[in-house]
Length: 244
Image (cartoon, rainbow, N blue to C red; front, side, top):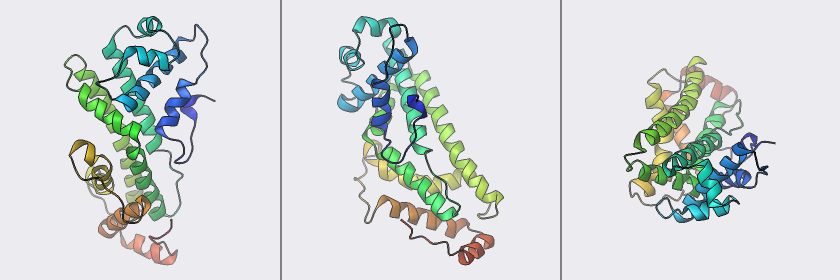
């Protein structure tokens, strides 16, 4: 089974995605898989030593090949970094969207918010975002990095917008700006998971659990935007906020 097709629960982490590619068997002329192994090696290097301390010889060694082979596939270091960043964002999107959807909209949205937090809490993802910030300081690759980051954010935004629009279409929440409603759902989680890295916020430790934090966010969301239909169905089917 291809590495990028694997799905799972919280046990399927950023690290395991990377390891799957690092361990992917590749024949001598299988250029595509060898390139993926190199990119996965870059992501592992960033996580372990940071973007600024990454070394080509270690990246090649992790990928199980010589530096000469690496340079044949990626003669330009900027290109190598950008393609690794692209792979990292593909993994991130996969982690965010690996949700088993539930017919109860409260539980469904809670699991989406919790999964979002779990993705950004992973060290590999946090180092990916930090590496991206540092790459934006390099003029020769700044435009490409911006394109990768923007495309990834647009896909993540679309994921949330589609969910919110479906709730509007079902008359479960009031129609408002999709961007504003998305921020209501995930803005708090972004500050709690990435705040220490980018805004020097204190580290967040949930009083109960991340699932409980997600429940509170979703509860506030439905209190603000929930329709009469939502309230009626919630009473009828005993939708609640406490299911772990």
